[in-house]
Image (cartoon, rainbow, N blue to C red):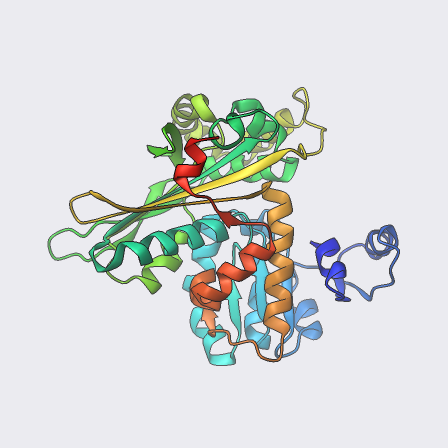
Length: 374
């Protein structure tokens, strides 16, 4: 993300606990940047730094443990805020606790502004727009693929792909997600409108069909549950699935469900996280040939298919850095029009603007007919 900001001519201030590390980071890019050594979990420290209309980009994680001070300080200061979280529960907490505060102070807070979950929000909004008023349900699936494997570029992923395309921080977040309660946006019941309901994170498996290939994804809580109903109030359900694991999806989903009670123990969670860092290949950097595929399907009230959208882009980490840089620069622009409060990316920027920003980050729509011919 810093590389992307510097490429755009920006000179951000680095904020963190270790001044030496931040200066070393700046030196690695052969540039001089302002640094501020503070405790990023301290509201008092952060509040002294932030001013109205500042733009804050947070990469502190796990966010449920470490991230609330930063986003709260931004909301109180009237600063705009973006982060790299993949924790849907964190995005939901930000919405519930800070929406009114941010709106009152003119701050726009957009959590999960990276691979999690900008392309899913964008793909979902495009599919729902094409489906029209009949759309009542949307399903979104996230997949990673590997380039250089012929027809497998768009269609296949394996457990090894998911593992080698992730970092230790991502694996720690995934372990935590298995232990936490998730949520879902569910269809209405008699007398009860569509609503967010608490739900175990990896409870179900959904199948996505695209270009003649079936892909499995296990459901996760995402910001799509929060952002898309704001734009499309007729929605009755929103499903978000993580399909990094290919044919291993269902076994892993079952294992996660069975192990979730154990993972509620901090000691067990820490032990599993340490083990993940000792497995073969754990110290590798994410593979550079990874690609992203995000599929969204809009359906009517009977479940009939109305529209499908697929987006492809760079690997999740590169995409996240590019999207965060674009969002920060766009929010800081003098002609920026942002919606105050806590919002998903579509509501914050508008669909057309977000689509252009995603394209700058290398995220493009792929035609299904052309994909079949690959």
